[in-house]
Image 1 (cartoon, rainbow, N blue to C red):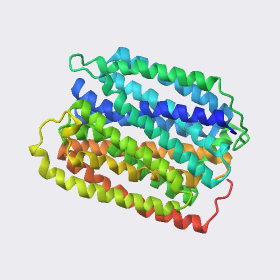
Image 2 (image 1 turned 30 degrees about the vertical axis):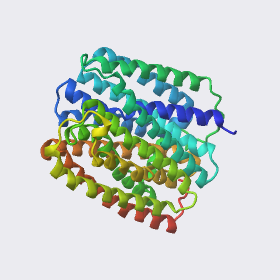
Image 3 (image 1 turned 180 degrees about the vertical axis):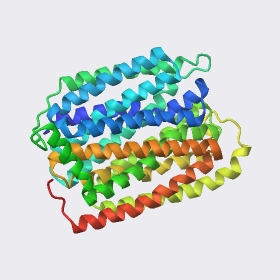
Length: 411
């Protein structure tokens, strides 16, 4: 199969970083319990993860083709390896910040490379959409693995035991590094300009393209929704549903699994159904799910006691995470729509813009939910997510309108 080696490398790297990147919700809950910090303080971890992603993407995206995608991914894996070791031996809230700082820097390099390579190894828009959704699906499988992996190291007698998970993660990083190092990756990519200054200038011009600008706002709103839920669902389960610490994380895995299934399904459905219809239907159903579940929590949480086993979990505890099934298709479909409309030499800078706005959306969304969680309670805090859902529908309709009227020209 053509480009099999590079595709396997992409899947493997994305799987490893899925575990690392989206452990933020787990670490937020653990930091509150172990390091005794407030919800608003814990919400800063999202910024330590997302802001480095945005900053690195801004400065690196334009000249990454010159540096090389394989080198970039190897560099990212090396950085996060040492971040895991630092977390193990640091064992304090300050070192969780350093950990997610290293994860953010590394993931920027990985995601920029992956999004750029998708355009290189595919030839049609449908193939691009299918591979994009499949990779994002694998990413969600990695997230689901994290929800089982971390609790496996929890101990009621040793509060430091959970740190041992980072030994295992370090081993996975080494395996991924070695596999990529010896993989044969063959591709040619055209640089944007004749030098680094021209690369940066022409990359920044992308943001003035109406379709690109509207898309970036849409990506911002989507990640605000997704991260607002993903980052705070473990804490939501623990505080609202009264799940035990272990069960709250394990139940959050339903969200990741539903996200994975939704993205695999999106890759298939996108071959037969217009992306805009898929996205709008998914957003509407997601909003209906929140409006169906949250009002019932306000009347039930006072009567709940701590729940430790799956058999004790109420029906609502299973329904809420299934929202992932419907928000899952949105992100890869939006990304694929814009990337597949651009020349391949612009995929790296466009990926940089996607990552920047996604990181900002994730940080702001998680921060707002964290502040609301602390001030008005978790059940009411999740109502905030209905606002970006409505705005997302509006901007998706704008994207569809613009794509029907204009063709993106090479800058």
